[in-house]
Length: 36
Length: 558
Image 1 (cartoon, each protein chain N blue to C red):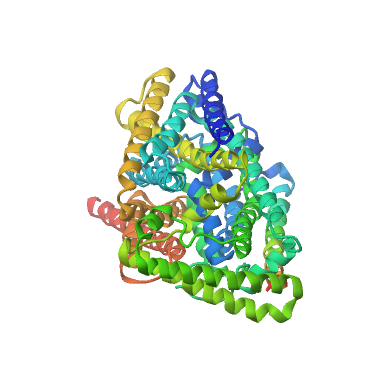
Image 2 (cartoon, each protein chain N blue to C red):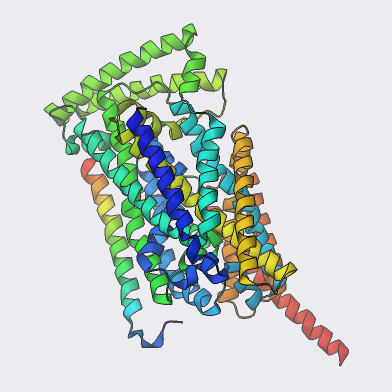
């Protein structure tokens, strides 16, 4: 389904989105913990 | 409201209508009017995607929810980034390459015209009624808080949006969305600063957050597995994922946004913009609600935020006694909050207990209103507008009302444009007039926008008197998304799925969610999972049967 000529660019972008989301959820969890 | 506030609101309305109408010159062809000639940059499409999702009632309701219930609502969005990735891999390239005008047009290419027409019909019903509630909900709140005429407010929001959407088409929708998002961000930024600046001297932002945190208002991750709890990490990640896939991937009001992008890559980038920004943006909105809560630790909040209900109850001796009790409880809590903030952790417990007593006294007032006036009373949506009116300086009130209008209009415009596109392309062109000029289809699109706009305003007027209708319409929307997603899963993923399976699978899916809502207490985010799974499984099984029938028929005929 991916474009053949993107050299895996979008795959790396998707991984970056997932990693960022995990970091954001962990940061929010830390924020809640810090102020609880 | 002062003259300056009115001037800002009127200037906003005039500018947005003018800005939308001037796009008319780019909207004279079918491709231009419905798809902006597939020419828009990713950042404009991305902002439009976010603006469409952020309705006025989301803006004022979310801040109100944070005030009463804290930040747990943010978990609703945890599934969004993953949904965007899945859509970037599947739906965006599929739709772009198929060169479709509507998501449902693709279903005819994959299945048949019946599946296309049924899904488009469900979209028109749910969104046609839904857009009425998008107008009525903020109009009711604004008219009560600011004392405006309800019908005038409905028309100010609904008809002004209809005018620029009708003339400028999707280009007007997208470019006004961009400016409306700027107004919303500026408004929220200003209110954030003004609230913190109004904390008492000696109380910092960190102190304020510590107050809120000690009462559990800053909970953002609930890892418990509980199908009856509305917002948990799992309902957000799994139920939210299915909801967002259904909403962004199968709802024409969102699909049309990324169909206008220049290329597949620009379409993908526009969705990933939301994936990165949506959770931080919702955090900011919820944080404002929490800071309003902190503000009211030091300043007496209204006993209930709906001014109409206060006016009704004012003369009653029982309510006056509740008010006195409430004022006394607030004074105790305020002193406890100041002590906790300035003198440290040893006063935490006293503050928590004072807040409990204060909450009990507010509950007495809410119960009183429920008993004497409205048994479904809920003033969450009134918190933020009331706070704005009573505590924001001149000019900022106007800016924030413009921001609430912008949130409402950006969602309404996208919905009207999508309704007009589905009406023109899926019904008029497909079933009645397949061969006509571009000018003809644009004229039909404009007329459809006008008719849907007027219909939405009429629904809004009736919906304002029928609270339960709003509930039914919203429920119908949530019944629909999971099942619609199931049809697209059948289309994209299951090669053996056929038209009959998709058609009846959709009907079974919607029915199953309806039954689940009637006979269980499962929270609504899980309905999307149920609808999708039932549609996919029943659709697949029916497809197998159909194949068998076909085989039997063929066998019989030889």
